[in-house]
Length: 339
Ligand code: SAM
Image (cartoon, rainbow, N blue to C red):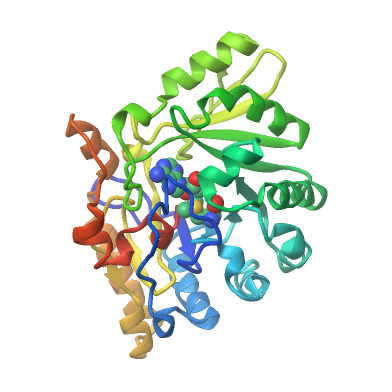
């Protein structure tokens, strides 16, 4: 099933909670937040029913995210419910890693396929400043556990000027030492990033230059037909890494991602200001066919190119003003929508 720009519905990011145990400066910098009402949060049975409908329409990759997905009690049960559904080729999890070492065995046994851990700094003082939590050791333990159980993993790093841009090399080397491919993410002006400004963005070009200067020329890996957001490179010693250039060189043309929030709102673009409510019809007893019709109608009329439109603006500032909008609608936040 294709949208108006010929992009297939394939990739679903499933947020299981809007709560997080970190307060990263680039994602949740405020002192207080408006949370989704508890009664609105979908039960696992409801998520699983929606997953079936998505799979029947062509989704074949699902990433569990949040908020911090490991805060959702007994996440492994949800993994058990969906991991072996026909048509699902890839079930991944994005986590900050703090609770990972406790849960990894259950998640792997339940059928989780892959893990990405977000880690922006290797320095404890910086970690505390950036996340407002003294949890770097727990993240390292989580990464170690992921390596033990899955053999390999990915590490996602948001690079911010004046914050951690001097750690690109150190993070690459750390990744190599723990069997992780590091993906450097440009700082995005998404909802929630209320401290964003263009001068704090370290561009794909700058990241590549910094890596190449230190380790030799980074060669792009040829991956034809890939709709993955990361462009991958190899260094002369064989180390591979990725760059996600959503801010300076967005990839809307191939974007096959959509997002389901923990309370059942479906967003077709990270920058969309409105989503499609799936909870109401689901709880009103809509049949799978009725839900399929809602999804198909939404996707077939999708023409979003949010990140490209941001670039076209020229002069950019934080996407959503905190006072006006974020406080009124938590759905606009990255931590609700699932990064
Ligand atoms: N708590 C989980 C984690 O830490 O990975 C999952 C949710 S988090 C919102 C998902 C990803 O979004 C993280 O890798 C985070 O770094 C990224 N993210 C959040 N705000 C961002 C921003 N302003 N620019 C780029 N990436 C961002």
